[in-house]
Length: 303
Image (cartoon, rainbow, N blue to C red; front, side):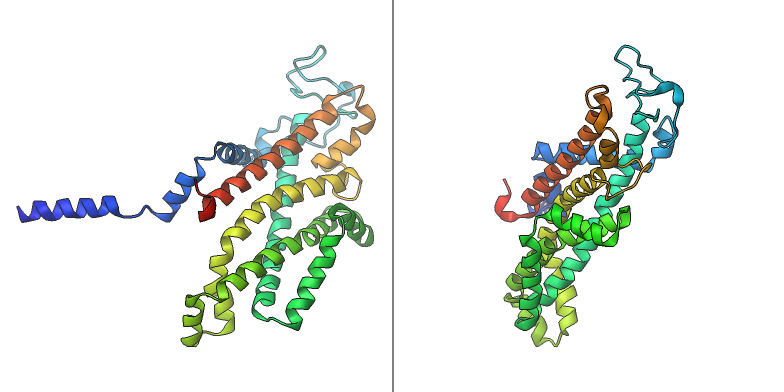
């Protein structure tokens, strides 16, 4: 009888116990249909990017003189050999879009990773070392924010020279101030709390306070901003590619594809519309995912 009572109490305690943090996060996240849809689209894009060599029906740079500006398969003159048609020099649009997903995701993730790491370190330094250091860092970030982001990126690439790596560096510099400001604000809020005071009394060094005590509690807003920043990085990189300052032909980058197709807007709608839709869907998916992460990670916004 006693054993049965103990088992009943254990089951009741398990039922009353709070859910695992990851389970609780997922329960909050999945209530946002748009965020789940964005996550599904991003997962599909990642799978396509990883398996581009296997999925793409043709080489993204292979030209065919016999199929210039061939329409998609559902239009008259189209063919299932080129489901989404071809461009002005006979390259398969579908293959270039799939390989372009790999390039665009790589750009977005690399740019945001560089910006988040640099911005977080600068934000931590500004939040902990108040005074002249903080003023110098934040005024530099304020000056950067006063300039139009795309114009600043164009100026940086013009100085460094056109190319994919220089374009990625330029976009990373443009996004940097957002992470510095978020990290600094979060650090200033956290250092006033009791656990930081207790760590100081226990003799924790400043580096331990910065990276082991405070930084994990500042991660949520940085994760949300990083997700939104990927979409911004993809969009800015596509804009630089469209202007001829980013990825250079024959790279299958979506912005470069738009630049190559400008003169065929009226003759072949697919060479412009399809890369533009790819950029639109990808940016929208990351924005929806970022909104869902914000709602799930911020207790004030939980539904």
